[in-house]
Image (tube, rainbow, N blue to C red; front, side):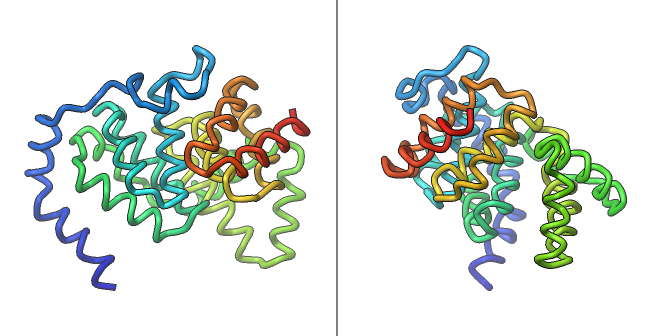
Amino acid sequence: MLAICRPVLRTATFTKALNIAVTSRSFSAAAEHPWIAKVPAPSSFTAEERVLTFLAANVGAGNLKGIEQDWQYLPNAEHGKGLEVILQAHTLAGFPRTINALIKVHELGLHPEGTKHFDEHHNLESWKTAGAETLQTVYGPISEKMRSNFRTMHPLLENILVEHIYGRVLSRPLVGLRMRELCTLSIIAGQNLPLQVVSHIRGSIRCGATREEVRTVVEQTHLVWGGKAQEQARAILAKTL
């Protein structure tokens, strides 16, 4: 418990020092990230967006060295989005890896702009409404059936899905659904979750991603998750698109 609490206290203590450090530190441009050149991508998929998908995958894999590299190439103006991507990862990879990733980026330096989006309007009814709408956007015609199935498995599972995951977390405004889905895909593509990979390939397209952008995310799976995961993701993509 102490290991979890300590970073929160330390962050409060040295926030001012971090702000000074991050403004003076030399961050590289997103296009210079060494993974960008390894997998071709359409021009619609910007370097900054691709770094966010790298970051999501590394958070999901618990790869702190990868997170450090990604944060180095994420522009200061994108730090808020980077935090959102890390935050949403707890719904896919669990709290421990999300906590460790947040500790790491705070150690590396967080630009003050990135903290402007910490606040939220705490309203359960709005989360229910937004969550239902977001779920419908991502899953389309199967959203009601999915909710019913979750309710059957465990009544609280549907509530967590709608109110928390799709309402409180994924409906936050700074990162749009297209990027949230592509980041989700980058995490689950490496975890041998074929049903979920199919759902989020389709969900990415429903939320505005192109087939080429989805294919790019799948093709970069090996960078974090290895060759076997890459082949599994490719096979699922081939059957889905």
